[in-house]
Structures are given as structure tokens and as C-alpha cells.
Amino acid sequence: MSKPVMIVTGGSRGIGAATALLAAERGYAVCVNYLHNRSAAEAVVAAICDAGGEALALAGDVAVEADVMALFQSVDSQLGKVTALVNNAGILERQMRVEEMDVARLQRVLNTNVIGSFLCAREAVRRMSTRFGGSGGAIVNLSSMAAKLGGPGEYVDYAASKGAIDAMTVGLAKEVADQGIRVNAVRPGVIYTEIHASGGEPGRVERVKDSVPMRRGGNAEEVARAVLWLLSEEASYCTGTFIDVSGGR
Ligand code: NDP
Image 1 (cartoon, rainbow, N blue to C red):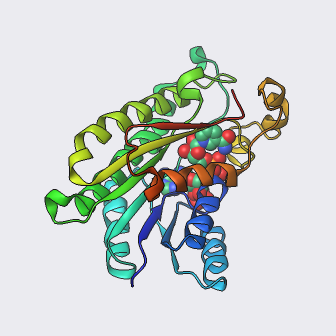
Image 2 (image 1 turned 120 degrees about the horizontal axis):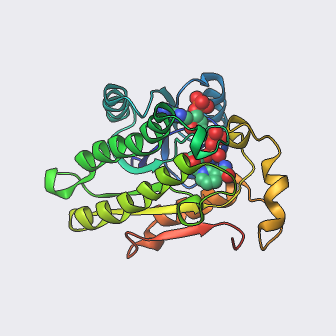
């Protein structure tokens, strides 16, 4: 029997890589999408294939419509029709007060985090929807505790982008619920990944962990497990819902 097919955007490192590896262990054929980091994406694919799984690394900017369409078409032809999408690709720019922030930066963050998730969800719905001859599927969006709590730190652009993800999750879930598609989201707290360094704050998790009730940062694998659960049949009656993976924050 052919394997269910998953696309993980931004699967080359961090939470996306952990999700791709766990998905392969659970029997999915996985497309590991990346933007720049081809060698890291290929390393994730090699680890999956060495363990007997099936995976493919595909470049593509989720914020660019033509890239997203090409990505989904390549997956169709090389792995089969997608039944699970993890909208994981996201960016965090360096901490900055609102009075310093320009519109170009806000647009960059919204382009990747919101428009990227929208474009991928739209392509997924076109393939999964029972209305268009698909057999259904599930989508998980990576939100953030920043959608509910803001910071910690000065990232109003990022908080706004993740608030939009929360609203899109609920809106899309209701729209496609009768088409065999479930849409949910995970809100990580502070997780040990490179995103904090790209946000200009290496060591950030160590600095903020005392504000976490469990007094530690989370690991990418702890987020991946929640993502996989929401995609699985165990969550068959969950749509438009959220799991906070935040150590109690
Ligand atoms: P990382 O910075 O570790 O990884 C980001 C991934 O996204 C990389 O694989 C990167 O590809 C990819 N990417 C970035 N921009 C694009 C794009 N335009 N098109 C395609 N791929 C892209 O991030 P995390 O693993 O930490 O975060 C994953 C998700 O979880 C994000 O949505 C983030 O906002 C969210 N999150 C993370 C938290 C944390 O503490 N880590 C907390 C809350 C939410 P490449 O390697 O090629 O550059």
C-alpha cells in the first residue's frame, strides 16, 4: 500500500526537521521543503532514507506563489497526492521596538509567515478536498505563544503574523470541515532552535526560561509530537483547535 504523503515547509532544520523525521518514522513519505539550506534538507532526507523511509528535499520560497505551485506539482509527480501539510516555515527578525520598525520589515515577516501559510494551505485544499475529487487530509499550522502573549521581547510584527495564523486556522477549519480536511495549529513557547539566533538573540531560550513555569525551553521533538498527533486519526474529531507546547507559559 502506498504511504500517506506529507509536505513539511521549512523542514531543513529546527521544528520542521524534527517533524519530518518523526513523520517518516510513523510511515509518511515526506517532502522536506527548504529555502536556502539545501545540505541540511538533504541530510534530513538521508537520515530518513537510511532508516528505510521515503523522502524528498525540494527548494521553494513559500512566499512566492509560483514556487508553491511548483513544489506541490513536484510532490504530486514524485511522491503522490499530499494528505498532510505542516505549515512550519517561518521567520523571526531581530528584536526591534515598534517606533524603529519599517513597513518593509513587517511585509517580509507577513509574507513568509502568513502569505506562505495561505499559499500552501490553498494548494493543499485543492488536492485534498473531497469536493474536488480528493480523499481528504489534515493541515497543521505553526503558530506561536506570541499570538496570545506578545513577546517575550519586542517583535510586534511576529506577534501580528502569528495572530493571523490563529485566525486563519479557525476560519479555514470551518470552511473545509465538510470537505474531509481538518485544520489545527500548534503554539510553541520557547524552543531550542536556530530561529532565535536569526532573530539576533542567540542564547535567548536560556535567558527567558525562568519565565516558563516548567523552567526550561522545549525541544523541537516535543513540538513535532503534538504536530503528528493533530495530523493523526487519534485527532479525528479535532478541527480549528490549538495545542500550546509551552511548558505552561
Ligand atoms: P528555524 O529558524 O530553526 O527554521 C526555519 C525553517 O524555515 C528553515 O527550514 C528555513 O529554511 C525555513 N524557511 C524560512 N523561510 C522560508 C521560506 N520563505 N520558504 C521556505 N522555507 C523557509 O525555525 P523553528 O524551527 O524555530 O520554527 C519553525 C516554526 O515554529 C516557525 O513558524 C516559527 O515561527 C514557529 N515557532 C518557533 C518557536 C521557537 O522558539 N523556535 C516558538 C514559536 C513558534 P532554510 O534552512 O533553507 O533557511
